[in-house]
Structure formats: structure tokens, C-alpha cells
Image (cartoon, one colour):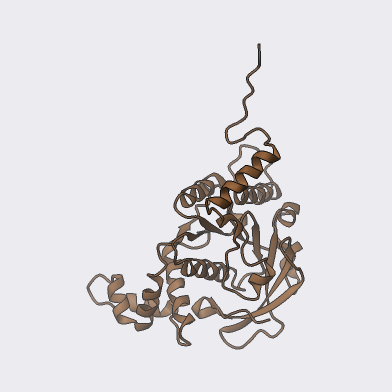
Length: 319
């Protein structure tokens, strides 16, 4: 009597190289090549260093001390990806545990206005306009009528707003399983998806194990995000916080990220943001981008950009 072998759900028996070769050939002939194309971040020369952009199935960490623009950077990259995908086949999704969707929308208005004008919007401009609308309801239409720069920014946002997704991460409920469901939902609509998580250390892990240390939690999340990148054939970009000890130095390095060995081992790429030795003047601060881990290209690469903090935007990277 033969024994029926059963694998856990989602797993399959090892495949021959012949089977894999047939699948690969089918993908090419059917035009399903999205998984082979790096997705441009819109920042050069960073894209060149990363093998042409964000490579599917890779986990990219963005680290650095507070206030250097990590959230600004990932939101701007997400915006760049959505704006460039005019064929409606690519989408970007930001899961943010730090800010709500409306506040991120405010940031996008400020960013978008500054990308085409030196006199961009600020959060203060939006709040002031919203609070001085008289007795009526200050809807979006009234706000856009009041601020011409907001109106111009909004008109550009409408060109990509169906390809950029925002969601507020819940400190208990937005687990890896929920993020997995998000990706399944998005991949059913788009050929290519880039997921951004802000930030890695806040992704909750549900466990009844009393021995769940911070390091074990970080290992679970980091390995989980890498597995999601592989299973959904997407790049995942995650902001990573520095440890308390790492913040004591003058510059935060890759090995200073909070979470132990898995945070250092699992990612394919780590890009660190730090204030440049010359901090800049006023709200325009020079930030150094350093590629400190890179399975896709060279390491030790350093480039600079100007952070316009009031407008939540980076200028193009400078070699």
C-alpha cells in the first residue's frame, strides 16, 4: 500500500531543472518579464550602484540617525516610481507606522510643489489655509483655491494617485501576515510592486513565547520581509532604526542598526543616510548617502543630496 505524501500548504516537492527551465521559457514567451526588471528610484547615481534600481526579490534597508530624511527619501522614491509608471503596470505602497495617510498626503503636496518650484508648500501653509476658511467646511477644493502652489502640486499628483498606496501601520495588527495579504492584493492588480515599510522595528510579532526578545523579534521581521520579497517577486524597502549605542557615535553605520545579526545578514542592500560634515544652511541640509552593503553592485559608494526639510524633499543626488 503506497503512502500518500502531503506537504504543508504553500509548499511543493523539489522540481527538476527541466521543469524550472520550462517555466522560465514560458515566462519569456508570454512577456512576463517584470520580475527581471529593476525599478528606478529616480535617484542617480544611486540606481546605477544598485544594479539599475530596486531589484525584485531583494530587501533594501535605509538607515541612519533621526532627522536625516529616511521617511522623506522612501516617500519620494515611492512617488517617483508611481509617477514613472504611466503604463499602469507598476505600483508603490508605503506602510508607515509613524504617520497617518492624510499627513503623508500633506507631505506629498509639499514635496510635489517643491519639485517644480523653489518656493514650495510647507505644512504650515496647509494648516493655515485649512484653519482660515470661515464658517464653511474647508474641503480640498477650498484649500486648492486658496493655495495656487497646492493646486499645481495636486494636478501632478492626480496623474499617479491610482498607483501610489498609503496605509498606517497598526502597532499590533499590521503583522507580516497582513503585509503578505497587502502584497497578494497589489500583485493581483499590477505586474510590478514595490513595498516600503517605515519602519522595520515597529512591525509587530504576535507570540505567546515569553522569551521573545527584541533581537528575536527583529530576526523574525527581517527574515519575514526577505521571504515576502522572494515569494511575491518584489523589492521591499524598509527603514531601519539605529541602536542606542550606535547613535552615540558621530555617524551611524550599517552595523549600528538595531536588531542584531539578522538585520546585518538578511538584507541585500543597505543604504545609510548621515549628515554631511558640512551641515548646510537653514532648512537646506546636505545628507550623505553611503552604500554599505550591496549584493547587487559596488559597496563603499558615497554620494550627497540636499534635504529641503520644510518641503519634505531631496534634490537629485550629487556624485
